[in-house]
Image (cartoon, rainbow, N blue to C red; front, side, top):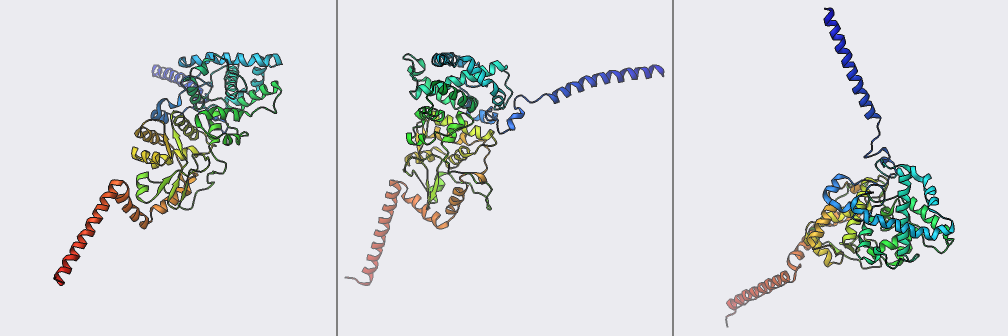
Amino acid sequence: MDTTSLQEEQNHATISEMNNDRLASLYQKIAKPPRLLSNAAAKASCCIFRVPQSLLEINGKSYQPHIVSIGPFHRGEPHLRMIEEHKWRYLGSLLSRTEPKGLTLQHYLKSVEPMEARARECYSETIHLSSDEFVEMMVLDGCFLIELFRKNGRVVRFERDDPLVNMFWVIPFMVRDFLRLENQIPYFILQHLYDLITTSEDRQESVKSLSLLALDFFNNHMMRPPEAIAKLHNLTGKHLLDLVRSSVIPADLSEPVSKHDTPTHLIHCVSKLRRAGIKLNNPRTAFESFLVIKFKRGVIEMPQITIDDFMSSFLLNCVAYEQCHKSCSKHITTYATFLDYIVNTYKDVEYLADRNIIENCFGNDEEVANFINNLGKDVVFDPEKCYLSKLFNDVHVYYGNSWHLQWASFKYTYFDTPWSFISAFAALILLILTLLQTLYSVLSYYHPS
């Protein structure tokens, strides 16, 4: 009996030791903060995210930098080393002008150090870089961007044999890479470095704002009128992607603060809208953002949008950003969802291209239709709080009018194409001739000659 008790006590002690070790391990896991999606990701200050896996599975490499890394998420990746070497060359070019005026590399590094904690909070995951490495990356990437923007804006001359300019394929790839969600540094870092540089040159009064230089750089691929860009000289953003996204959102295009009393109805595809007598036109007015969509007397007015490699990448990354950031507006998501609703097949794209609403520089109509459908796929969207909610309801009311539907269906069936019109006209002539023949027969019966 004593032996049994002793054995039970030994087993109990062993279990207790095992339990204590296991509990200690579990408590360590509990105390360890999340790294892949840090607690900072829920804060309004967090603005640079990893793209959700659901979107990565749909749109593949559209979110990954192809030739240049900006920020920590893709730092050091082998296929990005080529431009990494040129960052140091651009930094050297900048220092050759600022060091004689007292602004040395040490000054840049020391001035960014107090901003490190704030900059780290901008990222959705823990950045595993030392303090020195992180600050060095901010200065190197920030100065590279600023130097490139200034050279593009002819504030500073490009070197005669600069391969980034002379090899025509490089700049278009960098432009797209600079606007990828995972490839950003905080805008306040850029602005701080820019202010340092312009102060050292002692010509603040004549210098363009950083936002103007940046928007001019990207405008080589967006083709907006210079006067439209000039109005945005005081614009700012969380980072470059947010800056350019904000630049296409008109100030008066606000989202509803509260939901409507009646539920918002979604919109039908182009083919169904046309059968209901609803047309889609390009307003052909002075320049307007592609987001400005209106509905008047049975006509949806949509400014032209060019679908090409740049715009497709820009839209995809804007949607990803709006899906992740809790405080930003959802204008691009709304527009992407609207396009997804009205485009079902290549025939819908073909019609929009014929109406000068879509300029297709992307591929054939079917490729554009597939892109648009993927753009709105697996995207969280609240139709009640979107800036197009009133348009959706107005179109729904017009669509549900039976008279409009019947008359439009008749026109769509018999007058949509020249051949259907000719067939309908021939049938009408045949009917008239048949009626005349019948009338002639009746008259001949009652009034024989």
